[in-house]
Length: 106
Length: 190
Image (cartoon, rainbow over all chains, first blue to last red):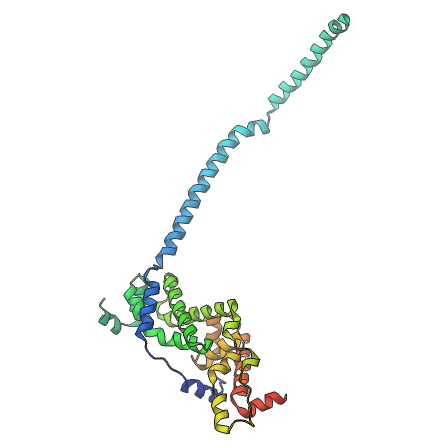
């Protein structure tokens, strides 16, 4: 009980209190809660969580498979670098060998 | 459990049944606690029909949230906190519906009324409560009508203890000023 309350106000509140039982009120609440099950939101939440988990797993799988195909192109190995350098050198040699033939024709 | 057995059962047992999904047990809880919730809403709203509707909403919320109740013995205070929250949400959503503008109140007229009429008009506690701001009204009603301590009000509303104390004190002062003719004259002078 709270202390330091005004006795006059306390008496006024007590004298004007009314808490009559009303069976119509109980029936009205029963009607409004009849279709509601407090477990329903929990079940809905669990179903949503399960759906999200499956969707996330599927998306993860797709990304993983895609990455396997893309990553080798993004991260060339040192050997592929050497091959590239070899191709450039070969191109220069071909150019040097073919250049005289081209200029002689012109 | 039969209705008569439910009526005689301890509240903790009835709460446990309701938590397990027993709709009849919940009906018994509504029957037992309706007086408290309806009285609380009536004090806070002033409007009888609106108070009844909010009281029903409080019980609907309670039924929806029963799965979160951890201590069946604390059902009463838990229900009261839900009812207060339902009212506070409504007060935030449509404050005009729950307050009487100052100019709409019957101004005391000591010249035109005899003392008995004046006293009767001033003793309209319901209208006087509607003059209070929502936080003051909740705190005053919980302290004076429900008999809660400041600490219990702080727990119920989630407000700091200092805020609750000042709301109770200020709200009670304003109520006294409105309900007492002499006090109101003093208030008008200052």
